[in-house]
Image (cartoon, rainbow, N blue to C red; front, top):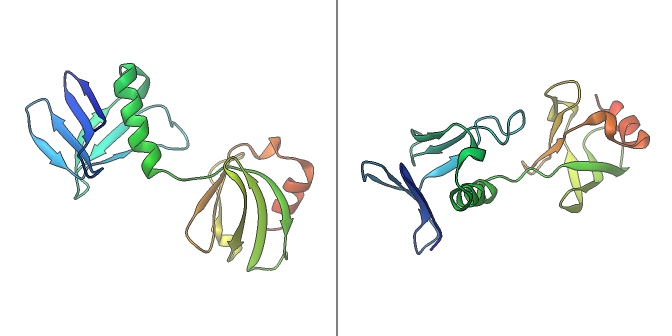
Length: 159
């Protein structure tokens, strides 16, 4: 059983791997979800712990302010929930008409994704894109200008 304890809350997993929260007043909450309110623009800032029905139970202003062991438990809960590979390079695109299959290199390895349409590419700001594939997996491009020339050129054809 993993556990994180500070004076105002305990976050831990029960023997079945379910995240639990015990608040300062001793109230126990089962099946909590730990989320980043701003996962792209401020990933190391605030963290929220939500009840099973989505009600906020706990707000953590700054992840960095938590003691080391507590921070590790919170990050473990976040990592278990979050999955957004970062695209580092487009290796190959099957077609410039959609749907198309993209062979990409990500921070988690090489994979193929299916782009259903241009509307599945969302620009968050001048440098950041989120691409949703046909299976609902979201991919992140953090800094568009830092990508290689060929990747940028291929992306331009879809935007």
